[in-house]
Image 1: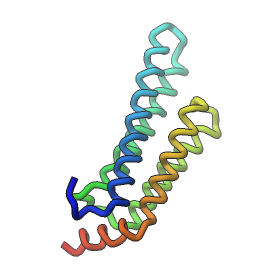
Image 2: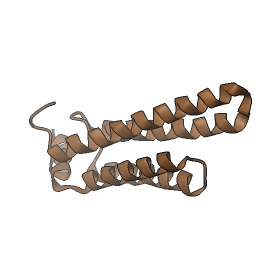
Image 3: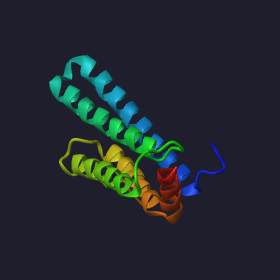
Amino acid sequence: MDKNVAPSMKAGLAFALIGGIVAFFAMAFALAYAVDGSGMDTVADAGLYLLMAVLFFALAGGFTRYAQWTQNVLIFMAFLTLGAAIGGFAAGYFELWFGIIEAVLGALCVAAAFMNGTARFLALRQAQ
C-alpha cells in the first residue's frame, strides 16, 4: 500500500474487505445448503448475504487510495452497512455467528470512518 494513505484508511479497508469476504463465504454456504432441497428460503437468505457482501465491498472502495467520497458519504455508507448487518441479525435472517461478526466489522468500519486521519486524507484527496 501507499505510504501516504492514513493508517485509519488502511484499517477501514481491511475491516471492510474481511466483512465482504465473510459475507461472500456465508452466501456460498447458504447456496450449498439450498442444493440439498431445503427450499427457496435458503436462496433468499443467500441473497441477503450477497447484499452484505456488496455493501462491505462498496465500503472498502471508500477506504482506498483512490476514494472519491467525502467523509460524510463514507460515514453514511459505514452506518448503512452496520444498520443492514444489525437489521438482518435482529430480524432473524442471519445466523448468530454471521450477525455478530458482521456487526463488529461494521462498527470497526464506522470507527475508522470517524478518525482524524481518514478526514485529513479524504479532504486532501478531494482537493486534488
